[in-house]
Image (tube, rainbow, N blue to C red):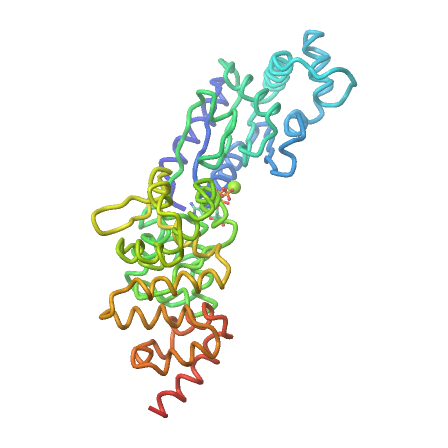
Amino acid sequence: MGREAERRALDALVAGARLGRSGVLLLVGEPGIGKTTLLDYVASRAEGMYVVRVAGAEAERDLPFGALALAMGTATADLDELPAPQAAALRTALALDTGPPPDRFAVGAATLGVMTRRAERQPLAILLDDAHHLDRPSAEALVFAARRLVADPILVVAALREGEPSPLRAADLPVLAITGLDQAGTADLLRSADTAPGAPDRAAWVHRATGGNPLAIVELARTAAESETGSAGENAVAPLPVPAALAEGFVRRARAVGSEATTLLALVEAAAGDLRVVLGGALVLHLDPGTLPLTESAGLVRTTADRVVFTHPLVGSSAYASLTPDRRRAVHGAVVAALPKHETARRAWHGAAAAHGTRLLRTMRTPAGREMPRAGPAATAIGELSGTAGAPKIRAPCGWLRSNR
Ligand SMILES: Nc1ncnc2c1ncn2[C@@H]1O[C@H](COP(=O)(O)OP(=O)(O)OP(=O)(O)O)[C@@H](O)[C@H]1O
Ligand SMILES: [Mg+2]
């Protein structure tokens, strides 16, 4: 869906490879942005080509030449045609022979030799997914080969997460940055994935909240279909539900900043970017005052005179999603403490979100608590946050409160 420019670029590479003009491209982007989907697209266009598809796996990152063995497959016939030192090096690397650790240059040259020999028989497409997880010796051998392709019917396309170090990124290979879908693409994806009725301006809100990240859009459509929580749109008070696989990538960047960065980012999310509330809340939570400047230097947020703005909308919602319920309640408690007294509705909502079980009921009996949403998505969110069992149980005491006021 969408992605016309990317598809055109990939079509041109495939067409070039068929004509003997080799092509190399790195697809780089955040988790869930659609890199694997684009590799699927290349595979679908590579009819008649010999397609080798390998995905890096975190668990095999320390297994030298593990990925290269998958990429080379049963290359024994091609190996026999290589110069003897290269063949020997590659044999050892692929554990077809025993011997001392092979010379990396010889392995790289042998990899190139096997690729070009194969491509003489049939145009070759090598598709490397999650290439940031490739073991280093394999990645180096593949980079060595990719940099030396000239007039060969060979295409190498690799997908990598942005911000993850890799020999492929360090090499000067062409990069196509994969960014979010535009608003029209978001609307198309919502239409195809969404079973819940949505407001007409929903695509605009979803686009803003997800930055056009397809995985986040699909997840939002799914949760919206399953419950009311995700369909609250612009009026939602609770942060976006972010799938763990997606949150993990953003949270890793936060954790690299420091142990308190995730809490700070969740606080920014809960405080809707209000700088005064963030600074006040950070004091309440005893967060290191240096954390905000550090997250800014790391490119996760920008600060203006009165606001903290996420550089990507999923940074905050992912940080929030990664906290334990206890920690989330603490964050909401800090927001209550930092909000000005006259912000009764916001204080009431965060107060309820910070409360637990019976304390939630006590909060709801206060004058401010009476301003809390009585039903619908916000009440469901409060139920989830406060650790009570969700909307029906929340609504019962609400009804009781209303009739006893
Ligand atoms: N252009 C698109 N149109 C519709 N759905 C898409 C599009 N791109 C991706 N998706 C959907 O979004 C989800 C995530 O896409 P994908 O797996 O390709 O992301 P990724 O960048 O490979 O993520 P990761 O870094 O986690 O590997 C999938 O469910 C996929 O079907
Ligand atoms: Mg992927």
